[in-house]
Amino acid sequence: MDYISLDLEWNQAYPEQLEAVQKRLGTRLRGEVIQIGAVKLDGNMKIVGSYSVIVRPRFFRHINRHVARLTGITQDMIDLGQPLTEASERFRRWCGEDYAFLTWGPDDIPMLEDNFRAQGLDASWLHRVYDLQKIYNRQTDGSHKQRSLEFVMEQFGLPQNLPAHDALNDAFFTALVAQKLNVPAGVAEYDKTVDLSDGVLLSDVSGDADVGAAGYRTPFEAVHDAAIAEPTCPLCGGALEFLERTVHMKGQKYLRMMNCPTHGKLLLDLRVSRNLNDTFRVRRTIRVLDEETENKVRARLAEEAVSGRPRRRRRRPRAEFRENAAATENEGGNQNE
Ligand SMILES: [Zn+2]
Image (tube, rainbow, N blue to C red; front, side):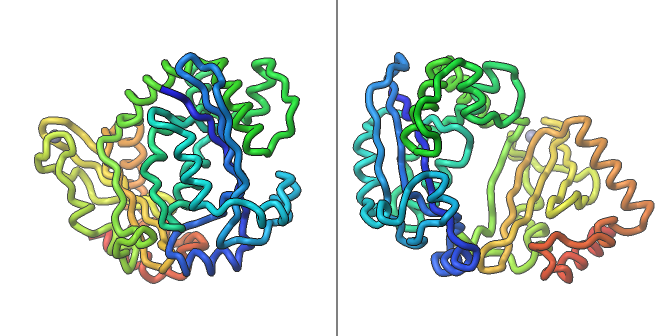
């Protein structure tokens, strides 16, 4: 298997334009890719090829001043760039058949997927993605810090003799760092842990209007949809017993403790966010309930019992939910049933 270290540069829209384009497309496109840089390593971590292309943006056609200054990519360059439809097809052919992507940090592949989606392109081949930053953390100090590529290169004594913020150079730097790590071992460990990280047994999203589903009209509706809020055990499919009522933690996060007679205590975690068309989606996670979390949830339940109502009612709703303050209030009332 080959490893492809990937880096992107993307153009940022100005806020008014961003909102207009997102609403028109019905996707959460945050920026438009203007350069794809990639370096291919073979199974022995030897560099065997590189790829770089300047892409002509379709929605955010004027280069953002800040982006131009940072990357050195000019308006003329992107005007002469390849459309993404072509660039993506060529890049796909260059990637080959058997490959995995290595990126520094988690942002690049989702950005590329959003760009593909906005133009109706197939993104299914952007699979097998490994965040090298995580592999680096596991194989060095075990921290969860987000180290910059520059920091890590200096640590490994790698010369930074090319300008940064060029997608190809950054992909090359990422490849050099990959050579200093045990990538095959990191990837194997990643595959093993990715599904059960933090004891997660199930994770899904409902009501995501941005990808075509029907959204919920209110956060209340999202959190109280029986199809979501009354799950069966992800391990055995058996009925779950609810231990307490749902508690509202900070932000739009709701937790409920449950018990499976066979598998023990589980936690239902619901997080609501707003879709572009002002409906709501909810991300649901079910995981094994640890003692620390149980204590936190119980403390919160006790707090609500003492005050007679959820504390958050006295707090200002976060800006993005402010318009929906009325719906949030209703939810609060319901929790005291
Ligand atoms: Zn069970």
